[in-house]
Length: 208
Image 1 (cartoon, one colour):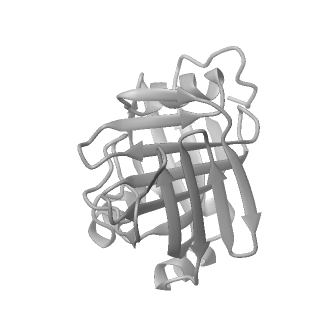
Image 2 (cartoon, one colour):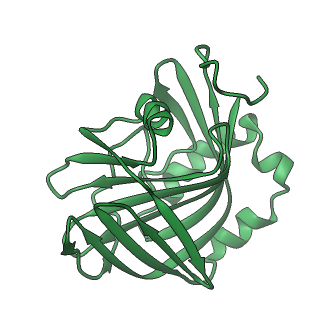
Image 3 (cartoon, one colour):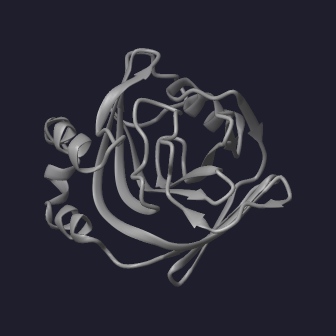
């Protein structure tokens, strides 16, 4: 298993742009942040900090375009600011809904176990339309999303390609990068992602 520990934030805007930010302090690729953007017309763009991240993420998800360049993340109290050459996002995190408290109560060892994650998939589909916890990620990979906490995103300012994208909105329609979407309500999810595959590149240093 390759293991990525961090968080994923998903949000929509009044202009119809949908943004998914992954921030990974711990991963086989080192610490990094990447962003997936889907325009109202369905065009999907990956904003990746380097070739290694672009190669790995691009083999796991589907994009129409990949752009390489610095992706910076800064945490300021309850706000997160992510900046690339083409995108600037500042989002403010609010409290936990009931589901967040439930996820937080599950012991870490259980919450990040593939069998537990797979068992939750049917529940996730019913409670959070579009959300999946396990699925085929392409290239012979199986991906497991072990959600460990959830907070609402209560405000956001988004600029893409020099244009203000308007007020915060739901992730609607769902994004189409992989087998599942983020929650429809703008959210930040503390998560452990596990990826199982047979063709591990030599530069990945995690234990099998």
